[in-house]
Image (cartoon, rainbow, N blue to C red; front, side, top):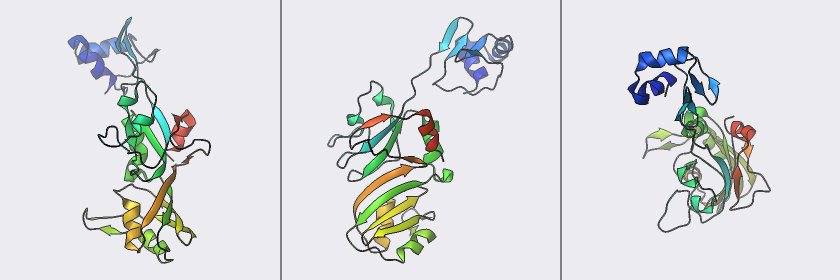
Amino acid sequence: MKLDRLIAKHRSLGRSEAHRLIAAQQVKVDGTVCPENQYPVDRFMQVQLGDEIIQSAERALYLMLHKPAGVVSATVDAEHQTVIDLLDDPDKHTLHIAGRLDRASTGLLLLTNDGRWSKQFMNAESKVSKVYQVETLQPIPQEAVTAFAEGFHFATEDITTLPAGLEILAEKRARITLQEGRHHQIKRMLGRVGCLVSSLHRESIGRLTLPENLLPGQWRALTDSERLLCLS
């Protein structure tokens, strides 16, 4: 929302009065006078009109979790333990999951209540890389490298996957790099080359890598620099 609109809605002051108050330096955003009518304001910012706080800043959360196997990437589930159940934070009910992993999969999972931030790296258009280590029941054929780079057409959704990186590490183990996150994408892609997935682990999102000292089931807040790493 733009600042002038927020002020205008307060006590039905109207847009003209909002512009007058902003020009008169009567409006502060996060404690600083803001002279811009069109300044973008979100719910994580405090807005003050004179001595009156007309919008209190909500607490923004940016968390990383080492998801263990058997836990569901959901906020609520009637049958299984969820990733939210692993958290000990009073505001965990405000969180959403930025890039789900299925119940059997493990690795880096990000949770936040800031949708604008998560959209920056989860949308396919952002082309932020997500890296996974995968083990299969069958040997991975060498021609799969080219097939992944060319993309696969999924008739159900009538889409073709973006080019993906496949690095064969061992006969039945590979590192896969995606720039999107379609439903069961890695399993479906490997299925096209005759391989069933036995384990899947997400190592990184953007340039943010799962820390070695963050054990399965553990979580912590992201630092400011780590938040930026997710976007590149």
